[in-house]
Amino acid sequence: MPMTSAELGGSQMSLLRLVDALGPDEFSFRLWLFEEGPLAREWKSRGLPFERFPRSAPRTPWGLARLSRRLAAERPDLVYLHASRVLAVLARRLGIPCVERINMTRGAGAGGWARFACVDRLFTTANTKVVAVSEAIRNQLVAREVPEERVVVIRNFVDADRFHRPDLREPARAELAIPAGAVVVLGVGRLVPQKAPADFVEIAAACAARDPRLRFVLVGEGPLLSKIDALSRRHGLEGRLWILPFEREVERLYAAADLLLHTAHWEPLANVILEAMAAGLAVVATDVDGTREAVCDGESGLLFPPGNRERAVEAVLSLAADAGRRRALGERAAERTRRLFAVGPVAARYRDLFRSLCP
Image (cartoon, rainbow, N blue to C red; front, side, top):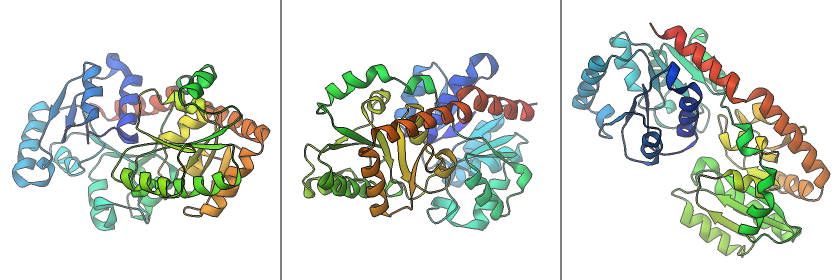
């Protein structure tokens, strides 16, 4: 029984991919949601059951009482949490094993209850096991005195065959009206402070002023959209920077691009980076958290300190000027994703974990 919020960010996409990988023959899934959103549509399209609760349910005494009654009545073999951490406490009281997937930094960018180490430790240790999506997150949890034996590292995974689509390159570039000879820099992510989309626009402006071949595509939605659009216009980037909404066939955008620019100020382990690497793109990204575990600096991409736009500009310009190096970095990136982040091995680790906890 997974429990999560209903947006369709990286965490929710990871849940859907995991459910698809494990399949209905081994596990049956029922989803609890605390808000409406696109995840419900994706879940229903798979013919899987779900139950909707008020957003306030995990935050009020009467809401918690209702959730406790429902959990006791349904009595799942396992609770798999992506959000609403207090439910781990309810599951523990009922003797139901609970696994929480943690993909939020415990560093400077910590949000919610994770800002408070003692509360974070209380909720985290209520789980039977905790899945950290990177060694960086594991180390942050252990530093907060979460017992090491409770924490297992299972990284995100990517369907490499889906994203490695060189056959889509020319039609995708034609759809975007990309000029012949242009070098396309792609950014994908929610338009929120964590992802630093303003850094992306500022880097794009500086690069565009020095290399007329460069074009930039920023794919994302979120509360900063109007500010990012205004910033792009202020820099006069019309015709050089496109800001597009998320789309289901994002692999077409990877195929159209020549490299990925990821500007997040903290990042447990971004699906976007794994997807771009699987597509064979060279990656220019911030040297943070799980990103440095995915991207080997100088081998499968280039890393720069978060917020250091000057370093990012030099990295983008150097790769824009050297197609051979871009290609070599992209090939090594694709090989690395197939070796370390393939669906089968990662799903198998979840399968083994779930089986070890189910009665």
